[in-house]
Image (cartoon, rainbow, N blue to C red):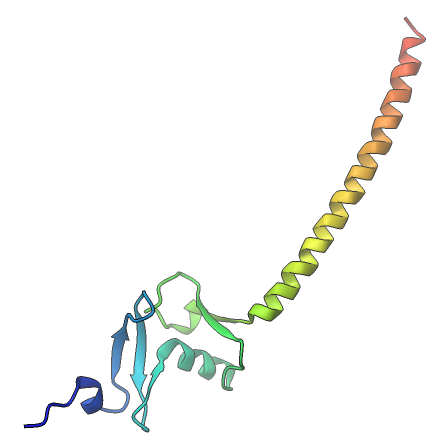
Length: 120
């Protein structure tokens, strides 16, 4: 008697939970015998194309077994790094501008205090 592992005998479209990444993810059996991550297949269907290298599928509610379209979004870490870098630069520029304005206001405040001393 030859023993076959469950994933070899599973029908196409069968789902199984895989925890090899530390948290549970769902895999779906493909016609070629391979298993693919369900969240990636759902995201590709949503986009109407295959995921590009570097694109990641994230779960809005943090539940890696919840593969509803409304719970998934695709991110690109490279794009996010550029976005975060530009946002950081804008915030730094705003801080510099506010610090400059505060210095101007402190100078004006000192002048007003000097004028007030004249009345004493």
